Length: 249
Length: 366
Image 1 (tube, each protein chain N blue to C red):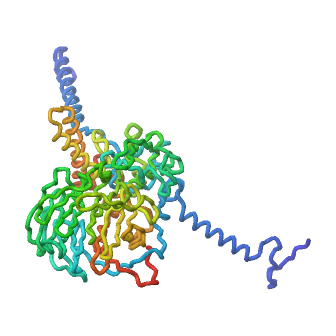
Image 2 (image 1 turned 180 degrees about the vertical axis):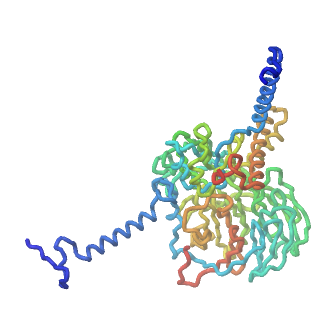
Image 3 (image 1 turned 30 degrees about the vertical axis):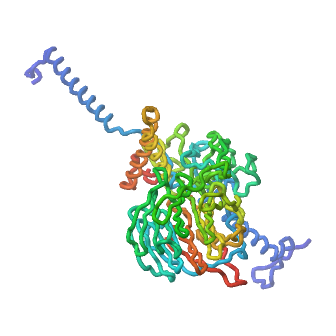
């Protein structure tokens, strides 16, 4: 029997080997490209400030020693007020920067005089990020008035755990997986005022290309938020790994 | 020291060992343990409901919300539901009726709370005023949209649209009518616009003018209310300055009252009061945002009493609710000719009616 089988010469063997190798290479390349196409944009954790109740969990449940959740100030919503309810204790003794008058337990809000106008003094409030632990106390105080202070996950610090410990503990399920390019979740009111400012800048830009571009960027930032909220409304319980909430993950 | 021994069938009571404390002491210890356990459960920040943060991180408004019941001068006597998704403004007429604007409509109620009629408006209304008997067109209804005024007759038929003196920055937040003057608070441009009864622009009030001693208005948020009592003097809320300013109708400043303070006598936070109205006897009713409270001031601006305390308006014992969709927005106020104070509650979408307490009665501080 063995003698009756046709003998394969070297040329035939090499042809077969080449064909087989080509098929494997083509299949591998196809699989690689298909894999690349199906790989979505990286997702990150972010906090929806419209769902946040300032419970303080962000400060203590993060796996980092100092939470990756920090306060931010949306200046378009801020009144730059002298009597800032996000900066001063409710029963402040004086409107100054003395520690006993400050609402923030870690002194993470910086108050800086800007101008005096219409008989009132105006101040800018910025966050000293390394000092902020994300407790949300100022967020509650500010919400009594304009609500320009709110919490956001800082992506430079966040480890982007598969199961975010804060998201699991969050009593209002305010944490979401969002595309890394979106990065932020604005308050609806912030989205409205940013969009309005963007439109106004574009309308008034005239020949100023930079001003027009900045206006367009603001408008796009607002529109990104609107699109995300629309997606949330249309698919409120998207499965894990895409744009679901903490409980989904 | 000898010990008493007791056999298995011995019925004699075993004497209490001398080293055990009396029952009373055990009871005290047990009671204290129970109290300690209750305290831990109530203030525990490390439990399931706690954040693990110390009390220093808690936002406590309990001291500010607490009101002395002796300061409360009114009680809630009725609630009138408004069939709208969103309520924006309220106004009262001289004959006891009241109007509510919201959604894209205006509803008119009889004094007893029954709805008499309703009519639609072309866009979301933001403010509302009704002409009195001294107006050229008594009963006319003025509805402020974002940047224009829609004029309706008493039956709700559209008559005209006014926009002279308004521009793309305009954001109307309040309307007032005095005799033949119609005035609108424009929060976007930080002025009060004045028209005559035909819609002809007569001028603006409140633009900064150092020579006339006008600083201008500070409006950190979209709350900017005006009222003109029977004395014909325009009162304008300057919310960023936490005071009420008085002007003649030609724009001359006459003075101001009110102070910034978290105490009950003052106006809380960065920008209050959010709403203002006047009683028939000239006393002012203010409504504040943040920690909602409705208070009564004399015609000279001295604090008199509390009409509705924070706890009564928010029905919450805990801390403030900060989510926009759940928070107590601002409470509009109006006063009818009988002295009733009408509070427009955006959370329950009701008109809540407050009337003066009988003398000697103590009010509900919440």
